[in-house]
Amino acid sequence: MSTWAGKWALVTGASAGIGKALAAELAAGGANLILTARRTDRLQDLARTLSATHQIRAEIFAADLAQPGAPEQIFDFTRRQALQIDLLINNAGFGAYGPFASVDQRRLLDMVQVNCTAVIHLTHLFLPAMIQRRDGYILIVASTASFQAVPYISTYAATKGFDLLFAEGLAEEVKPYGVRVCALCPGSTESEFRDVANQSRAPAANRQQETADKVARVGLRALAAGKSYVISGTRNYLGAQVQRLVPRRLVTSIAAKLDKLPYEAIGTDLTTALATLAQTLKSAEKMVNRLDTEITPGLKTTLDGLHGTLATADGMLKNTNATLVGTDAPAQQELRNALQEITRAARSLRLLTDFLERHPESLLRGKSKEKP
Image (cartoon, rainbow, N blue to C red; front, side, top):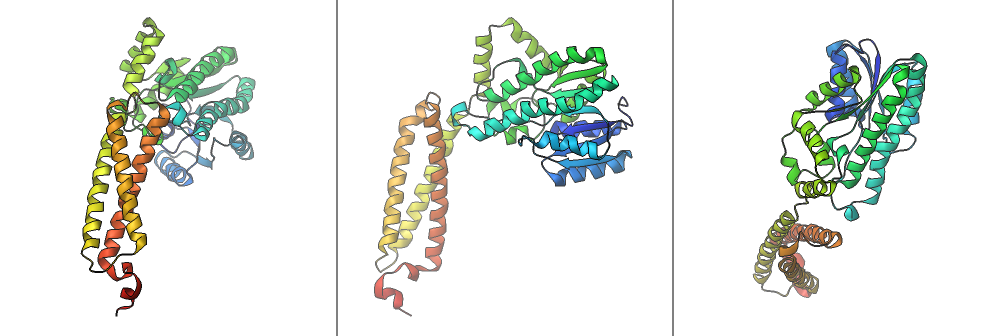
């Protein structure tokens, strides 16, 4: 679309997903671009491609919006380049999937910084000039999660609820000054979001997804039309509207079932890992037993210890596998940790058996090692 032809648009989170699609859509309409994200190489590739394809200007500025000073750095870059930003797109954002108590605290705080604080900061920096010119556009990428509580991504949903309410309120404030603000609320979209959020194995990951290109077009058209928010996709729109007629507690309960962590899958993975460890341990012991000489005390201790690990983990699995869904967050995390430890043990044991096959003499004790 040509609404911003010849004007400058700043797109955050432009290296992938919806941000990349927004940049491409704007470039196709003749807009010049300032692309910002963390990954310089991706920004450079995108800028080169869009410039060559659409004969527009494209500048890049690598920045991590999890850092409090990043918005000011981006703003200073535009001033040094003497670029007037007519369209600000606050797209950068990420989620973190899992029980709140088990998600890394730093990641949660960074999420609030990127999804909320940076949005406020950038908007506050670029809006005054738009008001003074009585012309400007701001698009804030929210989510269909903005409309409800979503267990297991509670913090993410809360940040997107903030983005939606901020955009709607600000849109009404600045309308008299000729500035348009819109919140774009996509549902499940083809992007890196689920992988970054560690949500790719959740049941909700199997929902039908919209393309990032389609979401980008919906958002830009709504912004140009003066809408304060838009939901991409008919199914997503109906879902957001219908929930207003349903008790909030029921909506949250349904969301929990849709997004529940696959604890049963953890049990399956743990069972597989235990079976692998048991098989590898058996192979190692057979190899050791083929030796005619005494093995070192260190190796015997290692094998005995692995036997103990196997027995303990197997017992834990039998006692908890039937009630994985009901266990509390620390217990669930303990199971995840056990799975990681067992997987590492199996890998180490495979390396040990390979070494033993190639160099059995290195495991012999005393004078046996001195044999030619």
